[in-house]
Structures are given as structure tokens and as C-alpha cells.
Length: 261
Ligand code: PEP
Ligand code: MN
Image (cartoon, rainbow, N blue to C red; front, top):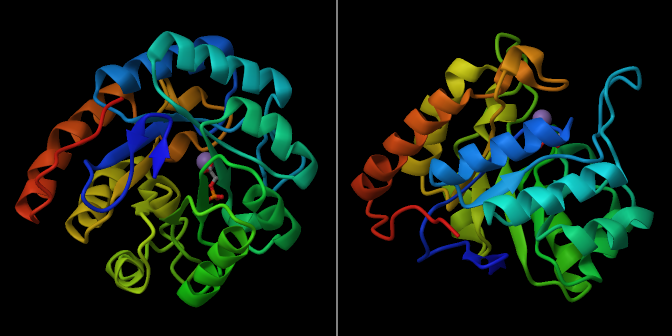
């Protein structure tokens, strides 16, 4: 399957999707898109509609955010991945996005899964924070059953008793999902750890475990990010990660390299 023109999955170069947690301004989004492109990223991520645990925090720019993403694609050449929160927004989001993200909190929102299954853009389906691997696969079936066969599975960490990290990244899920399904499997070490200094080592562990790609939060000034700054990489740290990824990928026999559009 493809995100824009970028192939994703087994036998294809590793796809690194990166960008801010949220589309929070035109400047931050365009600047990040250029940096992600220059570092060798395959696609730009960024939420225009944000599922926040607290309703009193920044919930995204909505439709205006979608317009900014379209501009970021035009200036960077990167295809765009963005979250859709509600069935009624699917059409508008799919008009702009090259890939629709279903967030962890919506993994079992079955009417939303039906809605993204009925449109043609690929779907990046994140594992729910308390979902088993089987439940993730059954949620993917909802999308597939409606006729959309382009589903990318994403391990983003699960809730455990451990509190030093935001979530516990389940590296088991990567080779397990690769064994259980033909679908591409990617890793989100940003939400999987919740700490910027854990993102690169866990990203590399996921690559070593056979991930087909990464979803990484990157921000020009993480301390000032409106969401998830503590787990966002600076441009320098993202470049360092991008330099390390091909070595690990090659070491485990992924010879196709790292994708760029
Ligand atoms: C995100 O990707 O910014 C996000 C909200 O992730 P998750 O749904 O995994 O919490
Ligand atoms: Mn986030």
C-alpha cells in the first residue's frame, strides 16, 4: 500500500512519518515539514483534530489545520497523515489527508472504523491503550470488511503499572503482528515512551524487531509545543535518529533502506 506515492510494508523501504503532535500554527507546521523532508522522512504527521484527555487543553485547529497540512504537503512534497475523530469529519479529512489516523482512544469506535472503511484513503490504526493484539486485529477487520484494504497497524504503547514512562512500548507486538497478518506494522516510540530521550532507543528497537516504519513526534521547540512537547524530538535529535535507522535496518536484513517521497 501507499501513503501518497510512498510505498509502506514488507519488501519496501522503512517509512518514517514525522511531525508535530498537533498542527498548532502555519509556521511550526511548514518549518517542521521542511525539516522532516530534509532529514529523509517519508511523510508528515500532525493532528488538526486532537483527542485530548482534558477538554481544557488545546484540541487542534480543525478545518484550518487541514488547510495548513495541505500547504505543508505542497511546500515539502511530503504526503500527510492526520487523525480523524468523528465519522462526520471523515469526508473533510480524507479530502486533504493522504492517510487517515485512527487514534488509540478510538480504536474501538466502530462507527468511525466503518466510516474510514468506506473511503479509499489508507488508514493508520493505532492500538488502544488497553487493547490486546487480538482486539487491534479485530478493529482492523472492521475497516477491511467495509472494503478498504489499506490498513497500517501501529503499536503505540499500552498502559501498565509502570509510571516512569507514559506507556509501556510493547515490542512483542511488532514481530507478533508481522506473523499474524500481512498488514504493514509501524511503531510510535513517542507515545510509546512519553519521554524524548527514550524515543530514539525505542525506535531503533522497533526497527530491529522488524517494524515497517515509525511514527515520530518532532517539533522546532518542544518546550513550547501545545501538546506532547515532552516526547517530541528537536530537529537535531530527529536528524540523529534518521542517521541511525538505516544501520539497524540493514543489520536485521532490511536491505531496501529508508523511504523518501
Ligand atoms: C497522536 O498520534 O498524537 C496521538 C494522539 O496518539 P494516540 O492516539 O496513540 O494517543
Ligand atoms: Mn501526540
